[in-house]
Image 1 (cartoon, rainbow, N blue to C red):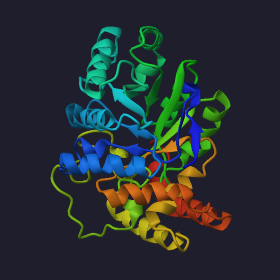
Image 2: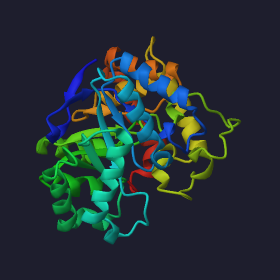
Image 3: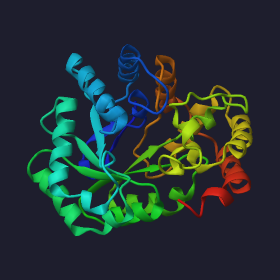
Length: 327
């Protein structure tokens, strides 16, 4: 699989990685043996980049990755985790003492001395302007608790503020055919600064797979049931902030644009991979089949220009008015 340098880390990662929120919580139950099988299928398919967080299943996702890597010592996988969402979202909680405690817990969960990459996990906007926060992150690097640090953001404005910080290795942001604002505002700035881009929610919480209908029922512990209007966390994390009815209609149109030989999900992943400045796209997978199909998107032909133009037109017609001003 194609490898790209992840910004200021200097490390190469696969252009399709694996997001592991679903192995921890909020997507319905995933059995431990199934989660390990997903990790194995991803690596066997060429994935060298896992993205996780300390809050996913209160550490379950990290611990599963740690177990997998312990059982596969030859697997060359770069693991990015996140910190900050296990406490009240007050700027004052983002301090060196907490950072040390949080990263120590993640190091234990993952079974490593030094974390490859730690991302602030969508913190309050005030955090991005705090010199003390970034000084504390620099201290973690100096102490070898972490090799590099980054941010996971909700908005383009937050991304731009983080990119301006000289120690920020990468920015993780929602990016998919239903979320084009980062292409216009964030990707060029990141490329100029040498900051990597990790694209999350690439399938708009599964909408772009084309598998959902008005009759689809999500389990009560799936965020697509309980967070459609931002009841639990930022609305943009669920269906990219697009209301479900609008999303279904747009997804049906998108599916018609997928070239022959590509599933709609693979077409969405190809779209992300082709955006200048993207380092890695991190779809989740709850099954071995999904993990393999997602990884296979890296080897498919690029989307032709007319398809890219049709996707942009679909966004302008159906989606832009709903999400562009917010994120």
